[in-house]
Image (cartoon, rainbow, N blue to C red):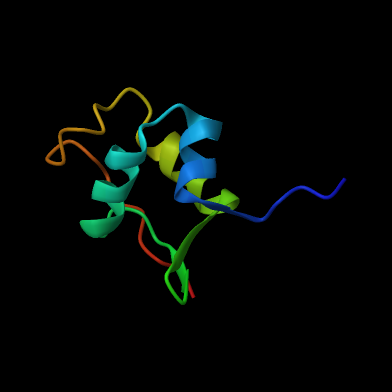
Length: 73
């Protein structure tokens, strides 16, 4: 089975244990880069891993503490 390279918000929430609403808020505030295909929002697993490592020990509900992961080209 091939590992997914991108997850929906729901899949990312299940995978990480972060609430869907918290993830959506992080996305709305441009803290986490996403791919948008029509109405579907995808988070690259590579970006998700980097975001979690960057914010280890941080309260993700407190946006003032969160270190944003910038989109790389």
